[in-house]
Amino acid sequence: MSTASALAWRCNRAMHACAELGIEIRALRVETLDGRRWSIEVATVRGFRLFELESAAGSEANEHHPIETDDWHLDEIVEYLDAVGRPKTPPAGSHPSTTS
Image 1 (cartoon, rainbow, N blue to C red):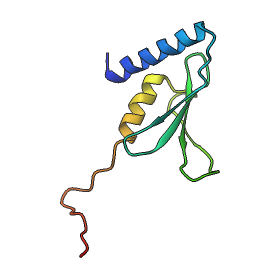
Image 2: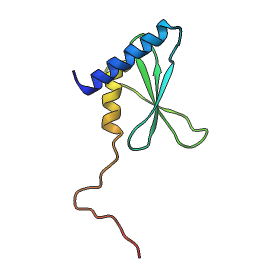
Image 3: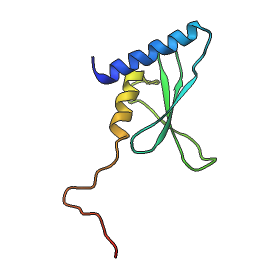
Image 4: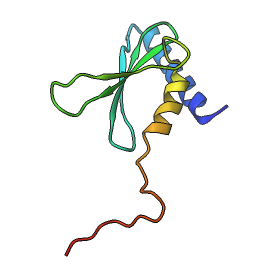
């Protein structure tokens, strides 16, 4: 089982345990390593919607859609956020600028 699948399984299990106690989780807010903030919202029994939250006050959230289906599976979201949420590395051979 991949790390993304294992994490998604644990999250789903926790959400179901909360539901059994009468606690409804409607969304999760996460921040990726590059500093972007995201909202993972429950759409269906097994599906989720993913929104990138803008940092400017009052701006709209930008929905990210999966390629093949209407809703994301949680393990797909984990893999996607891991891929797009890493800090960008400068191109090989570039040097940081310095000022005196």
